[in-house]
Length: 425
Ligand SMILES: Cc1ncc(COP(=O)(O)O)c(C=O)c1O
Image (cartoon, rainbow, N blue to C red; front, side, top):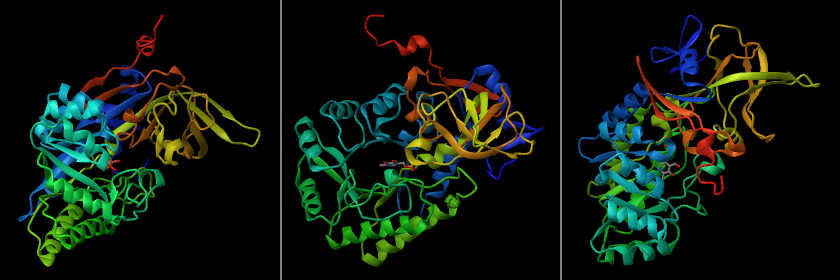
C-alpha cells in the first residue's frame, strides 16, 4: 500500500473513482492517462473557497501548461477559475472550448507577432509582458487600450530544481527588480496611451513547499511598489505550490496557507500605506498533478549480471519525461496486486531507444510478471502536456473518471496520426 492520501484500493485492486484500474486498462488500453475529474473539481473549489479575504479582491487563474484539453478548459470555466495560457496553441484550445476570453491571461517570454495579434483578435483580458522588445512588438498592433501586467523577478531563491526555478536575476523570464531598466520600463508602460498598465506578475518557481518563499515574494514586490510609488491595481504571484509525488514530499496545507498569504498581504499593504489591490495566483500542478495516474502494462523483465532488476512497461519517456528532465521521483504500485508485499527492487523503464528512458530509477514492487498493470501516481501535471512522439510512439489516450462515469477526453493516437503531416505517404 501507499502513504499517498489520494490513492484508494479495494480487495487488492487500485480504484480510480468507482472503477478498478485494471478494468480501465482493459477497456481503454495502455499506456493510459487517467484523470480523476472529481479530484480536479475539488481542488478548484478548494482554491476558490480559500483564496479569499474580506478586504482584498482575489482571483485564481489555472496555469494551463500543467494540463490542457478542451474538456479541461470547460471544467475550469464551469468551476469559475480564470486561465493562464503561454502560447498560440494554448490560446487556440481555450478559444475552441469557448472559454470566456475576459478571463484569459496571456504569458510567455517570446510571444510572436502572430500570437499577439491572435490574443488581441480573440480579446484576451490581459497580456503579461515579459520584456521591452515584446512591448515594441505589441504597440503597433493595438488600436484600443490593452490591459497589461509586467513579469518581474523579485530574486527569491525557492528550493526547487534549477530548471523549474524561475526568478533568479539571470532567469530567462521577466525582468529583475534589481535592474533600474525595469523601473524605467514600468514608467514607460504607465505613460503609453494604448497600454492600461495594471501591475506586476512574478512566478518564483515550481514544486515549492515553504510558505516563507511566497510570503517573501509578496513582501518584496509590495516593498518595490511602495518604494517607487507605483500605482498598481493588480499583483499576480504566480503558481508553484508543491504536491506529493513520494513519501518525502510534504506539501503545504493549502486552505490555511492561502488564507494566511492574503492576510499577510493585507497587513503588509496597511503597514506600507498602500491601497488595496487585486491579488492573483496561478496554480497548475497543485490542481491537477494528484488527479492523474498513468497505467502501463508490464511486458518483459530482466536481471542484469550485477543483479539489477528491470521492469519494462509499454510506455516510455515520451509519455513520462519529468524523471529524465528534472530527476523527478514518483511512486508506483501494481494496480492489480495492491496488497502484495513490495519486496523486490526495480528500475522501471520503457520502450524508448535511450538509456535515459527511466520512469522510476528505484522502487520496490512485488515480483512483476508480464501483464501486470503498473500505476504511476501524480502524473496529472506536465505529463500529457509534455508528451512527445519520440520513436514514433503514439501518445496515450486521456480519460476522465468521475465516480461511476468515465469518458475519453483525448483519443489515443494511431499510427495514421503519426504520419498525418508527412508529405509523400
Ligand atoms: C508564469 C507561471 N505561472 C504559473 C505556473 C504554474 O506553476 P505550477 O504548476 O508549479 O503551479 C508556471 C509554471 O511554470 C508559470 O511559469
